[in-house]
Image (tube, rainbow, N blue to C red; front, top):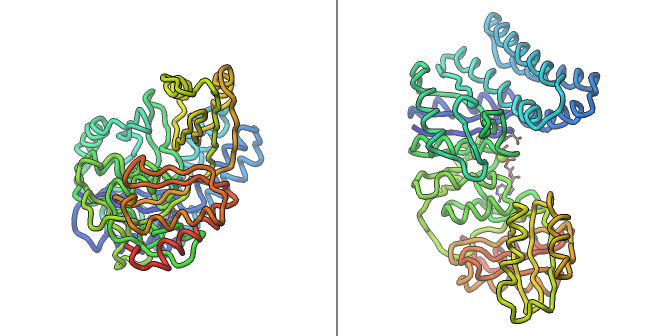
Length: 444
Ligand code: ADP
Ligand code: ASP
Ligand code: MG
């Protein structure tokens, strides 16, 4: 069994849905197909939730009608048979009616999750119906029946496995199952979601639960590139990455993968392939536990980082001081990404500022605290990158851009620097040139 995931652009138009169909029929192996919402739809639903909060009935009605016509238009162009067309349109109307009902309720986290996951519900309903109408027989599975994810950070794969096996045995056998990405149920059984971009994570949770032979993530680019192609020209796809490398890059901002995509398959030896829906023949990227080449592989950037400097003369020679600080962050469930220390001060970074005020208040009782917002972590990744003889060139950046923190040697596979977000793009460009272009020997 393989798991194939198709992202928003891949399912974002009639033309692209037909590309996906071709990809599905080009391979005979049994598969579970995880689909995102059509591109733009989840953003639309996030705006709808804002109107639910405001109880703006007119805006809600307009928004749901727009959503309905978008999906009805897709059915009109995709399906020829009038009877099937009508059935699918009726199905969409039923879902939209349900959405009107949910939208009339008082805002809550559950209402938010219910609304923003409807994009996947709509798309998979239409696509599964279309495939069946084109004699690509398949079964539509409701992910809410098996994606029981008590903790998004640490999903219980065995629980998903048991539920999924039951769902599969209760359904008729098929070589293609279609299901929704992104949606899940929380520990109270309420509808929840895996955070934005979470369909990648759905695919690896399912792949891990079923011990899939392979997980394919189909998107709009030919694999994971050595730098962010949205900001840097002349990037190139990397053919092989280890789980460690991919996990670091995803966690530190490579948008092509949800930050937690890799964690369910680490230790399971299930390869994750990143493939291009618009160029299926392109090699893409294979993520596995094999190291094909050590050294520098790629750079990524994570925004929304807050740097916190904690200074106290009492830190001098005092043991137990760091424990005391870390306990505060732990008590307020805030994880730390980067740390640097001197004898009298420690600087660290966080990305979740929900409890920042409380953290500062507590630490201020014994130390001086300075906060700097709007920073980005630039992460340079590769197995044994710290031993790569070319890595030293990254420090030439100090000549051009103010660097707030450096983390070197925390792991062999990652060197991180912290810069003001306004310097992020120049930093990515500079590093691309220094590390990948001038010295071709550094290119993997
Ligand atoms: P999908 O909708 O298929 O999940 P995403 O938009 O989430 O697709 O991810 C694909 C996009 O990620 C690419 O179009 C590209 O602009 C962006 N991206 C950012 N960093 C990288 C990288 N290092 N390699 C490849 N793509 C990247
Ligand atoms: N549709 C969701 C989003 O846009 C999940 C995904 O596409 O992965 O975030
Ligand atoms: Mg994505």
